[in-house]
Length: 189
Ligand SMILES: [Zn+2]
Image 1 (cartoon, rainbow, N blue to C red):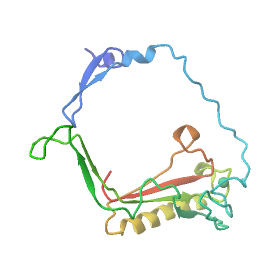
Image 2 (cartoon, helix red, strand yellow; image 1 turned 90 degrees about the vertical axis):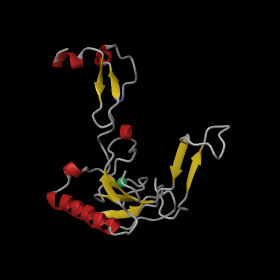
Image 3 (cartoon, rainbow, N blue to C red; image 1 turned 180 degrees about the vertical axis):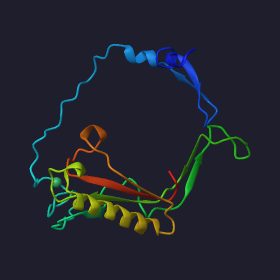
């Protein structure tokens, strides 16, 4: 088998991290595709959208009102994936019929995971992206990222701070207003 065959012939590859073999079928990408075709999102956006929950002065779904911010704006995610105040406990579920004295792995282990999720609006302008903003405005965003990283990282139970942006409806970001996410986790993800 040559290197070229890695892109055209079924084979298995060794995952060097886990020692497991993984099945690869690269020729499958040549099959016909009759699936869903996405339309492009609208390119004409207003500078301010009264229905946007991130635009300055607007009310969010939980009733909170955004300030009339002029540069960046950071707030706790109203629908946070992680919460800071939860009971710190764990649970293990064993196979049906397993007795207390029986050794062996449980089917499921779960542990509470604390965290803080914040949203960063990059600009008050609804119609911009980071790439369209002036250099000084982008610099302000990077400074906010650094401030948030230090602030959240200084919390004694936080072990990881991740700053990221999901862009586009297909990625689950239904709001085009320029914004990103910050997740602070109790454990290293
Ligand atoms: Zn907006």
